[in-house]
Amino acid sequence: MTSSIITNQDERFARAAWSAMTEPGDTNASAIVTNLGYIDALDAVTDSTRAAELGERSDGMARAVKQWRARYRAEQVTQLLVDADKLGIHLVDPLSVQGIADLGERAPHLLYVRGDITALDAAQALGWSGARAGSSYGESVTTEIVSDLAQAGITIHSGAAYGIDCGAHRAALAVGGSTVAWMASGADRAYPAGHSQLIERIATAPGSAVVTELPIGAAPTKWRFITRARLLAASTQATIIAEAGWRSGALNTGGQATALGRPLGAVPGPITSACSAGCHRLIREYGATAITSSADARELLQPEEIAVSA
Image (cartoon, rainbow, N blue to C red):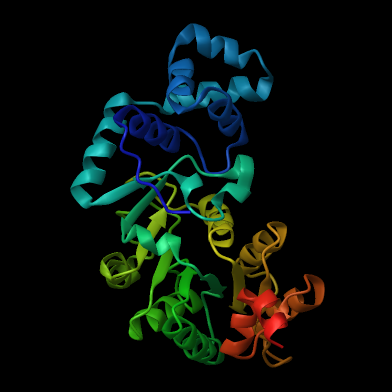
């Protein structure tokens, strides 16, 4: 499968409008666009008579339609598309990106990609995540293992956050490898702001990209960080959590990978370290594979191939 840039202007407008009107994972919106298609679904919501008919389906749908209509501004969508073109941000069909279709009704309406869209077509892609307050142990392990994997041609996906995430991106870039940063904000908005240079490096490096389902200018929110995890898990063949506390947000990414049937790995740490308590929890409660080397990570990506060669 090859990621596809949307070129039809009406389709671009309609998908951009839906991405701006809805929050990630809105299943009511998914039901409508799946049934009607993006262009007709937008017409239905913006037409008063048809919108009223949609609202008759249920109280939940009525509230959703009212919210969408309140958020819709045609001129803002037009400006969004103009800004995307100016910034070199590609509008990509999510279902053309490997793994995203597995999300079903939770799939995004659109992906905004700044950088090399071929980064989303890598034969091998690994999600790497962890605590924002990573320890020297977690950062060292991340640098060592990710460097080996990136040199072997494996594309590293992460979330550009402080701590383990940024360590993974930097390790991949340092060896000339490819990396994808999944953002919980617009593709034009560096978050955290302290990583603006790193995010720019990712967007301009060959084989790397900054990707989001959120429209240009969108601000990050707690909910958007939570829903972003499903994209990181779906777009990769396996996910590894390098370091995480007992209630770390990184565990959400691991949970999403497990729910999608993707292999999950976790790096064990000292049993006295609170920073590794979440990883030990994943190993014990989720059946995550203990990852102690790049060889372990490659086996997670290629379990059938390893079994045959053995």
